[in-house]
Amino acid sequence: DYAAFNRGRMLSFNRDYASALQAFAYFRNSYPSSALVPDAMLETAAAQVASGHSGAAVSTYTELIENYPRTSQGRQAYIQKAMTLLEGGRREDAIEAYKQVVRRYPSSREAEQASSLLRAILADQNRGAEYVAFMNSVDGMQLTDRAEAATLEFGTARHRLQSSGDTSAMEAFLAAYPDSPEAEEGLAMLAEADYGADRTEQALIR
Image (cartoon, rainbow, N blue to C red; front, top):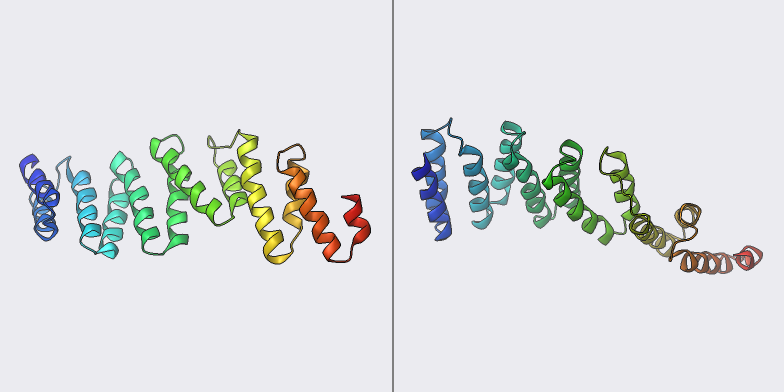
């Protein structure tokens, strides 16, 4: 089984992905009880992505997750599945995949990796408050850095205020983080919004 598995790997290294996929299929059919099957499935999905078959790769990652949920390979499949979904433009599906890793394996290395990637995606979309709320809902993953939480939630509040004039998120931010470095800018933005809406007296109070 070791030789058959590594034959597929060598073919992948040489970028002969079609042959590699055939080799991994042969390996799984010939040695279904091998301890190397989870690794072979990761390698199969990687070869599928590299050969432009992302849909098939997502299916392989899903199968690995379902069949080997307690292995490091199964946890890593979540990460790779999310990355593949993200590259394919399925952003919300990728976000949910990262969240599943954090929910199911909060003490794992993969959960730390997933939380970092999730933070980057949501912050880029001005959804930092969503990230903070999600992390604080998972036992063992609560954000203890108030400065980080304040920065993320401020980004969300600022976006909502600038894009739609919704002041509620900024009001909530200031109530939760009145002493944060961003509080002064938040107050100034609220005052400007009040002035623009002819709430001059409220703007002066700010």
